[in-house]
Length: 210
Image 1 (cartoon, rainbow, N blue to C red):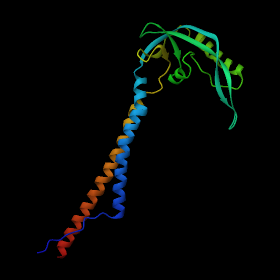
Image 2 (tube, rainbow, N blue to C red):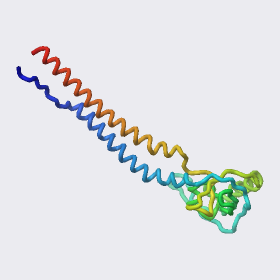
Image 3 (cartoon, rainbow, N blue to C red):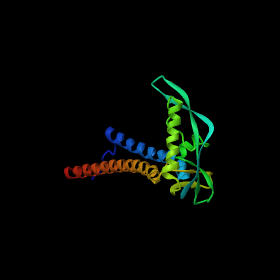
């Protein structure tokens, strides 16, 4: 009795489905490396900062002023000036004086000042915003302890009021690439299994009619 053979060839739709699955697998692997290098590494460095208790030592405005860039429309852009406010605090981790910054972005933008106001066109408005911030730290916070973040290795002379990243960054760095990778594998496996079952069903059907 001749052996029944069934062609095990994928249709065009099945071929496209497998290619989609392979694309998702490769995309998941590449995105994991890209996110890990561009996003996860800075986030881990940021999260290394320890939470500490800070108390204000001094609040002062120095004579030096800095430039900021304002926009007033699609083609309207210019520079204005803002005064430099310095808030020195004592943190419980190092028990030393450090300069306070709202976050890492402002620290990198101007490491000499504690606050960069939203840039306004008029210098006086910028000065008023900084003055409001100064009054807040002098009168409302005063000597009350508050939570700050201190990194002895990266910035021993500075503390941050809040972290730029949190633990959710770590979740997203791994979650979405892994989900993409698993979906790709699932698509490929289901397509191959469906084709295998179809071939077996066709083989059994031919055996019955032979």
